[in-house]
Length: 409
Image 1: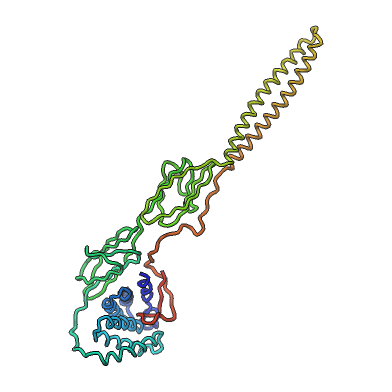
Image 2 (image 1 turned 30 degrees about the vertical axis):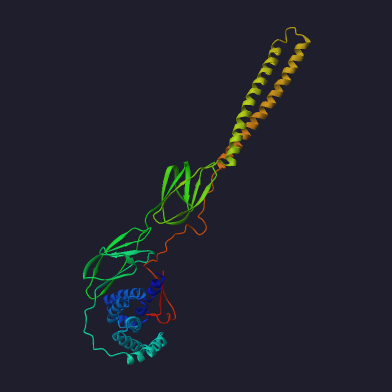
């Protein structure tokens, strides 16, 4: 697969590296067909199907006869000759390498072309001469390509194969089925054209991946720092495959963070329980203390009122004769009243302070909104996009077909 991706870097290299006047001379429709044929040839070459590569590159060369395409085609002819020792491919390789040098004497691949000619021409002399082969109709081929790792491709219900799948077929419509673990299966109808190699690229879509979260009622659920839903019996969260950070928080509860890794098409369940924070426990203790202090203050106030009533009763009866002990009792009642009143006031103030402090602690006991994890949620997408980025390189590796052009996914 890596080799296939590297060879896709040859796509459009011939066109983009060619002088603008030569490219402009081609009709837009022909140019698009040449691009598609060149890409098919690059895929076939990477798969080791040199006959299919020759067919596709010949079509591209016929539409846009650029030197770089000639070099790529020569390399495919050279590989086919090395595999089957057929003189026609040797002769064609020599012609194309020489055509490249004639048209691009200062081309980036001139040294490679000269080296190839120095190796092939002696073989052309010693190779047995064969009678001119009878013209044969070009085979009709389909090439199905998917850059998804582990993709399995079948055509018209036949045996599945790896990408790229190249098959000789009858002209007309055919059904391709592409599948891979963790991806939705795709069926695509492809039309084969007589005598041509037709390329069809298939991009698979990941199977749904879900996370079920059981969290306390009223809790807030975050994934990768983004609020998702409220807690309850169950929260269903659709996610992409890869690593994610699940965070669940609720006022008065400790924030829970978990790292979750999901595979394509996987469904996972997380059960979350939240523990009460120390701040909330302290707040509850202050409320209890406030209530206790309030109750004690009320009792002390009752005692103070009772002592006050005793003192007032003595004052109402002071015009009557009273004993010396009654005055002592009056003074004692006043002293008790003052003591109970002071104690009650202290308890009331303490109750109010504890209540306000507990209220502040309760209101401020909110979970910190979790931020996105460092690096964000990672994805397991290891399939390359079929919309590549292009970049020029000085010289392509020696012995490989095509223009000096690179493709990055």
